[in-house]
Image 1 (cartoon, one colour):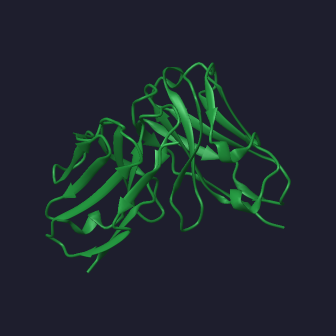
Image 2 (cartoon, each protein chain N blue to C red):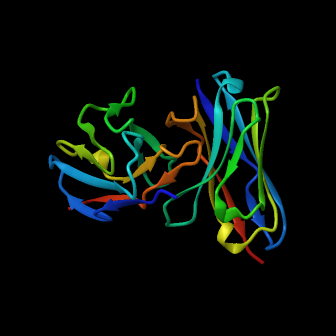
Image 3 (tube, helix red, strand yellow):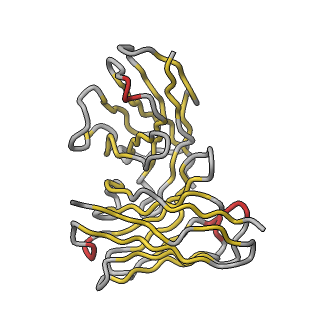
Length: 119
Length: 108
């Protein structure tokens, strides 16, 4: 079945880095754009970043100020989010989600991976 | 940037009630509006896309309407499994997305 599984979350000290992964299965990963969306504890959904099906187009939320990098490996059906200079306010559940094309909705989501930034 | 607002932020309703949630965009987004349902501990689930199209597998008691800046999600005859938080999301500025702040539907 169509599935997205995130991994790589954990507890990290402020200023450190972390790389999240999102493994896709059950569909042609290389045909879909992919997004990262995060949700701080008890808060709403915040869009983080998007990468096109072939990796040629990438966009980020302005609030990230260049600290995060989204990438993908279509040969391994995997999406990544490299996070650097982590802050307490980056603590959240991070979800990956697919989109068929730019204006289409996020129709499949992973279950998320938790990132906690704390000393 | 397009800002999204939702009202109310929370509501209490009973099983069988009709529930209406409103979403407003800071500028016209035509029909580029999606609705998601999120239950505690779960990922969001797509309910409605393009303002009024029902996602496959979603019960027909859910419906969406609106265009431009004002949109509505309606649940007719609320069921126990519908108690959740609902988010609107604009895709007009795709590939950048913006979510509304959410509306929590509580049991009365």
